[in-house]
Image 1 (spheres, one colour):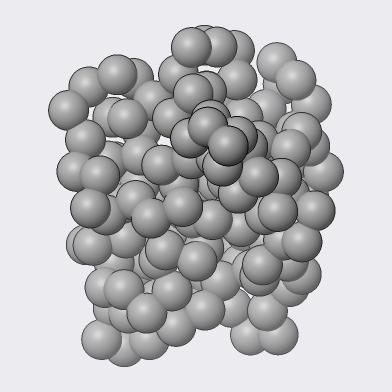
Image 2: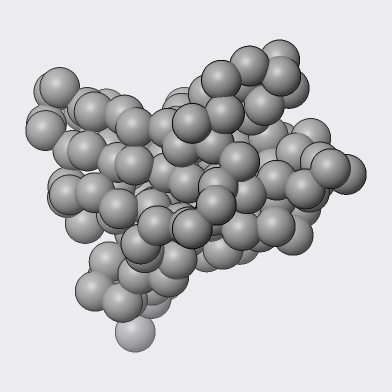
Length: 147
């Protein structure tokens, strides 16, 4: 089995058996995003405690295997992390997909999506959850709207 096959299996597992799918009862913030180029939709609930730690997150939406698997994998990586580290994870993943130097040690299963970088139209699918999360972090840090 090649590394590409292993990566495909990881992505398909997260797509077919998504982790953290659903809604949180009392999220700190909810962000919804839509990718007009392909129709993917994502609603992300984030629960952040007073110490700036992502205690939980959940997503719902509809979209391609890449966007839904990326949401599952990303939430796996950021739960329990401080907001600054979660932001670094999102930035490293985006760097990976832009074929820039990325801190792979932060990525975990997200690294399985590296092949998406060869398909620029699909990069938006893979980064939809990161964009939603970064919007949530920005709004939380600004002390603004929390729903």
